[in-house]
Image (cartoon, rainbow, N blue to C red; front, side, top):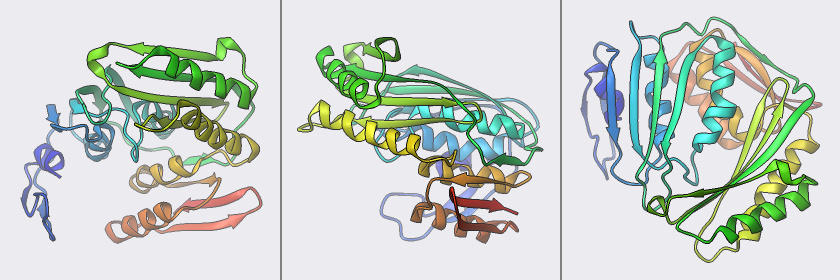
Length: 286
């Protein structure tokens, strides 16, 4: 909320922890150079997704720096935004360059991302009903201030579950001062869409279990035919509603997707239809 207020000079009441009500009165949107320090391991990517849509409509290019967590449970990790989310926005007309300066894991934080946002109309409706052929796939296992063996064990599980070769497995050993932290991502590149599945290491959870859960999620996606996973499905709603609309096929409709749709309808004149079809769920933003 505070980041949103800064880019448009908003006045607000109730923007503090424990508040039960929020009043937000936006002012004039301003392009510029912005820096937001979350101060904890809170998600950099969620803050970016807050300011990104309005800054796409600003009068000039903006540069945004955000520090905090870059790979957090319960929010899209940097890899997902860069590989899965932003390419679909680019198909609609967005011009966004995203850079990871430093990884940040919970609870330490200290990560940093930077974005260059060039104003652009989301002039092209998105039609994403087929994946196209599988172009490639790979896994990244990140470790900071943890034994490299943790990442190696994760990659071995993924290789076995997905039948992948050594050249598809990448161990990413990060500087110790970024940790402790561990995350594993599985990236699947299809002709029309890229999907990223992520698991996060936790104290008391075996590396094999983290990797197995992530591999099973990727395997379920590969076994389906819809191009859009459950997480990308709710992420795409807002850009489509602010642009020219469109439709896409998703593997399933979560309550997150449905609640997102209802909230967007409250703020816009768009109508969002979510209905079953043979390949999964068809989402249409009118």
